Length: 335
Image 1: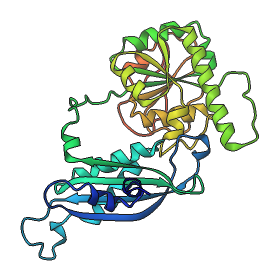
Image 2: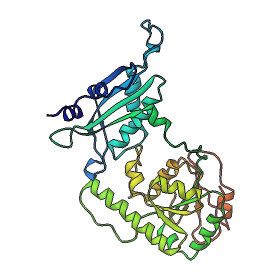
Image 3: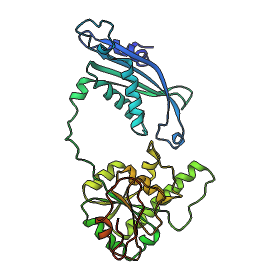
Image 4: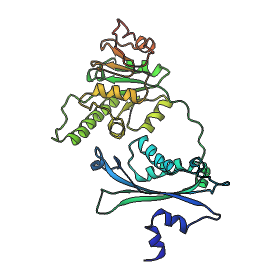
């Protein structure tokens, strides 16, 4: 075995030593740190955890003065394990590459860190360890494009439309009112009236039921060209900033969320309530369905026979937390 191939499979500490930059650097390492985590792009990896091993080496500047046995004067091992924990806690990830990048970036924000080697391996996906290894340095961080400070995320109106609302002759009028508001609108729908196929398996049935909701989202999009079906947070953020009326396709966000919804697609109004909280919505407006039993944002209920939404959206309660909807007279409801 050539020296290059041997080094490729050595512990990151050996890799660091073989590619040492000019000047003396100290190294700290965390070896064989194993965590059970849900990660992966394949359906078989969803809804279950697998063992993931982390091996990390950090090259650090030597202290200019004596350490004097003072833990505050070194880069602690805890900073490495905390970087791993924080990256895992952000969101459910599909790729080890993304996880390794986030760990490396967190480590390099430590004042003494100069370069880091991060190896991440799945231990339960085959007869051996399957993984990635990356090397990142402070120079990599400095050469990244600097993005402008993002604007504060808008707090959208989340609107649940039952099938009677989707088919209502008032739909265009409701969309006119939502389009005229300063805050963006995201529409949620339930399943179509036709029952979804039954798989007899809980996990696959959940996926089928979510896809049934997405089919109905496309039905709504077919009723009005202003409705655009979107399924990722990136698409939603873009849509909200550009005044687009979005129809939420729930599969990706619902399945990827670390604090996923307790209710499944069999209770689509509860799912919409979870989504409203997930998006930090200003309110949840329900048309053509019963309101959710609980919701972390104010809940409004629109009379299916009324075309106006102006009062429903302009007089809503501004108090955060669970809200009891109050049905008003003509023109919708007062909140």
